[in-house]
Image (tube, one colour):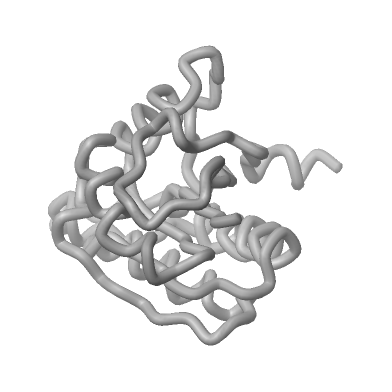
Length: 165
């Protein structure tokens, strides 16, 4: 079974207008929330093979915080094409890596992540807030390319779910 964790970057800072969208860092709330969600990933899957990450500052900051809480001998790929990527492009990128990896984290952005989850299950109402997580499994054992219908949503988690406990 293959696990895919779609992880939206932590809350970004809008406090300095000098930064363009690609260069915005994490806000304090993002710095607080990312480790909470990262521990959830590690509890669900302690052997991550690969982390795919958008090239924006906020996703790389999310990656760096996340890696402090993730076990496994993982490879990391920073991909420009994940920045504000569509759901179809995210699927294409995952297809490039799924044959050689069983457990993948993909750190990206909305609306692509939201659209991806809706393409897997249009009845799922997960809005993908910042630092939101969607755990998917591949429902078939294949070396060929997958479609949205080959995936199943296992859980969705938002930081508020953990902070309210």
